[in-house]
Length: 413
Image 1 (cartoon, helix red, strand yellow):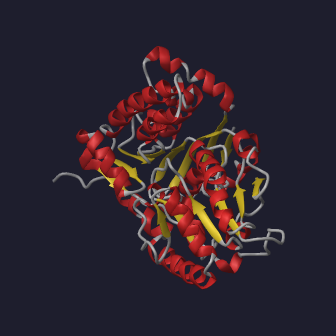
Image 2 (cartoon, one colour):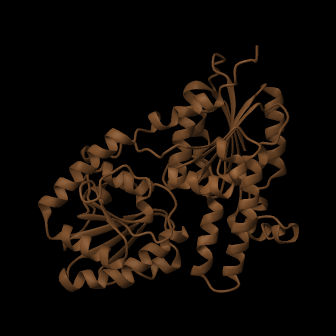
């Protein structure tokens, strides 16, 4: 499916932008970042977008992207079929993520688009999309890895039994090899936090000089207490909320751990405390949590009221990479947030003042109970959290560096 823009503005240089998932609507972590990058790029470039659409409901949004793009090549994919096809990587000795996002159709479109529109610069969002950057004509290439995905897969391994543990460990090793190769061939490799960037510099020392940081941001006008709306919660006890895409395994692991191991301990002190799991595509393991004290919403039309009217927001991720959008959004909504140590990595906020860091389950229970018992502290921390986000997490400020990275170097005299 290809959509052409109605508005050609030749004063801006052309640019190729490649994303592994359609960057609209910005309703989950990676799409929030990829959409804001698209919006930033469109301010200074004419953008040709190549992307995959992995959910049929998102096809309706392809036309919406015309307001930021000259043309959109959106290729529908079926995740179940792609997972089977990705097993080709076992025969080829490559990471399974690469055949998953391999498409002769997209490769042909990329090559043709570069030639037809004299495109000299490209941005790939997520490591696997870097396989489309080795094209004649491109002079400036940037990869937004976001996180070190290879390390994420390696981190999954000990949490699963064989054969999945073996498969995840293998994916981590093979994907790191590809990430290193890709990073060595481009002008810049970007990560969400300095911790992720340093991890990659250590894993890929040959590319260290071109590794940088581009932090996440938040739309503080959209995620604002002024947009709280009416409470979606029925009458009852205090509400603890988690928001996120609920088919993403780290999120599934987080809410399962919280609901089964930590919530019962919280309810020993606050018997009417309720845990609401808010987010699209809840996996069967998440749906099974619904019951006494736990609600699972599935997709909601607007997540903001669920955040704004919660007493405490939690992000108890035991496997997390980089700054979590869900944390920034809750802070922007002026809510007190309890986050795991991994979720807090790189966050420019003061623990105990702007948010709470929980280093284990005991810490999580203690912080949640303390906040539930003290409405004044919840209010003070929420106000401080919003101030922190407004001052430090502007999308436009963080993404402006892309213009510098994409600018061709001056000619050698």
